[in-house]
Length: 301
Image (cartoon, rainbow, N blue to C red; front, side, top):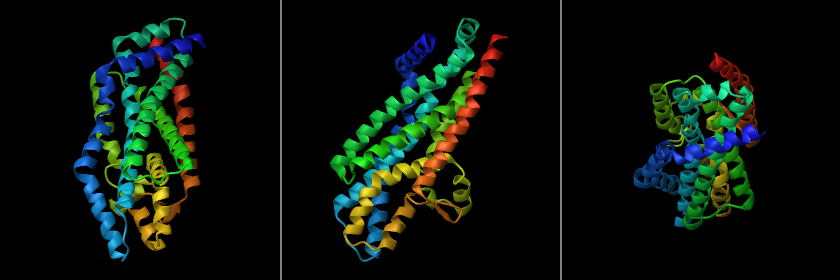
């Protein structure tokens, strides 16, 4: 336990001390913020107003702003939980490149201790960054258009935890096979540039082609994003219904921004989304534990 604690502290300290690694992990969230502030927020606001006006209803600016803010915060957190996990876990690769990992496995540190040290440190670092992002998002929503309850906040934090756990395990598995600076840069670039699209953060999955929608319905990240959407926007939709919005209009808006996700033609319920994400985490953990042990034995040779 002493060795594990020392490794966790060492990895967390090195991540936050390496300014290049730390700021690289924030590139994708920053890009998303720029996109929303300069372009996407106006597009979404116009689309919401158009859909509501077409239904012959009127809506307050606070409700519109709350809808856009909820979509922004959920998109930001959906991206952070995975991209930050991948970038902070690059320390695992750097140790292989510099030979530090070989020195560690040649010492008295057990393979499973080393593997768990990387994973737990990565999980803690990711949660620290995403926790701050969630807090900032809640403050932003409070001043923009607040419709959340205490239960929504707690569920939102649960979503962040599960998605961060998923991102940390996925990055740990992939980084087990990376052993050069070129591979590390390529993986970081692909994840930073591509994950925001496939999880529906940059553009709702409902706007993609039918074939792509069906493909993305197999990815756990799709349901993680939808959970975040539902819990940042549940109060907004309740307010719409209380204001007299027709149910079909509310459902249409929920469909358009991925609060409702469909596996082929079947709507996936929120409990089912949690099951999918939980099972995915369990599978990744079952893969990572023996994989980290085997690669640790390989490093000793």
